Every structure is written in structure tokens, then in C-alpha cells.
Image 1 (cartoon, rainbow, N blue to C red):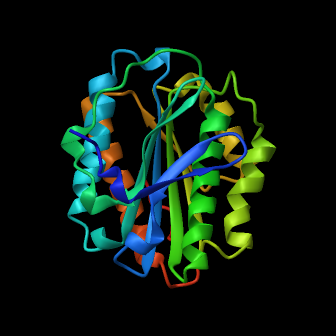
Image 2 (cartoon, rainbow, N blue to C red):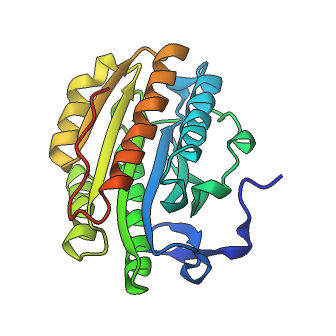
Length: 242
């Protein structure tokens, strides 16, 4: 069974990667919040595959129940030393969380590359929608258990992208949330990345217990709902407390 119906999707090639999204003429609303989940699947998270899967499924299930569900689009990626798109931007109501699979964890952590990938794709898809008179804002959530150790891009490259979509008025606003799971040894580095790259928020979840990851899923779904509700106000939603 396919994760999503690809018949209405288009692929966009940019400088160093490609992403996909529903063709604008196939969309049913005039405003959307573009959500990207970027999940670390490096070797150091081995043993937590089922918990990460459950967290992602819980986010999607919670968003299905949101009053703003019809105005949400979701892109899902996984990353180690490379970034893999599970699926591109599609209406969240068409994503069946039961079809997600537990990741195969291995490799190193290209955290900066994965964050930049998520933001670039958000900016570029927002540009396409904006050109067709859609109202758009965005939310990127990056979940990792450690510091970057193999990226090609720098924090400055990420920072330039974080502001680009809003500066060009493709996006009304963009929130980028960095989440540390089992990352206590790297808290300082992740806080520094948040500051240097101009990310919106760093959240330290603590240990990757089922209870903590369930709490994380609720936090992410509430953040998505808040950002969606802010669309049309001229600014981003307020950051929530984990």
C-alpha cells in the first residue's frame, strides 16, 4: 500500500536535492500551513525505532482531529548522513499514519543538511503556492539525538534559508523547532545551533521513553495547530512550553 496517492504529485529539482508536493491546481483550499517532520534515524537511535514510529503516527492522528485539518499539508523526511523523503507535501487528511514503517537506523548525523533541506523545500513549495495566490505559513520540526558530524552545509547556510521565505513574502511566517531526544550530552551544541541558525525553539525531551515521546507527539501536534491558527494574522504563533 502506498503511503500517499502520487498521481497528483509533482517533483521539483533544486540545486542539491529534489522534493515533491501536490500540484497547486489539485488543492482544495486557498490557505495552507506547510509542516515538515525531519526525524533522525542514525545508528545512535537504534533500539528506539518503534517509539519514533509511534510518535510520528500520534502526531498525524492528533492533527487529523484538529479543526484546521483541511488546511494542513505534511512532508515527512528521515535523515542520517543523507536525507530521504518519505513523502512530499500532501494534504494531511490524505496521509494514513498506519502506513508509516519503523525506520532502519544507521549512519552519521547530517543535522544541518537535514534542517536546511526541510526549510528550503518549505520555501520553494510556498513560492509555488504563493504565485497561485494561496496564503501560506510553515512549521518545521527536526528531531535528533545528537550534534551534527557530517553535514556539507553550515549553520549560516541554514540561517539564510530560515529568513528567505518570509523575506520574499512566500510565507507569512515560519517556525522551526529543534527537538533533542536522548541528547543531554549535546544540549550545548544543539542550543548553539538553534541560536546560530535563527531557529525558533529548542526543546529537550530527555530520555526516549514511551511516555516522553507521547508527550512530544502532543507538543508537536499542538504546535502545528497553533501555527495553522495564526495564518492570516500577519505573524507566527507563540512558542509553546513542552
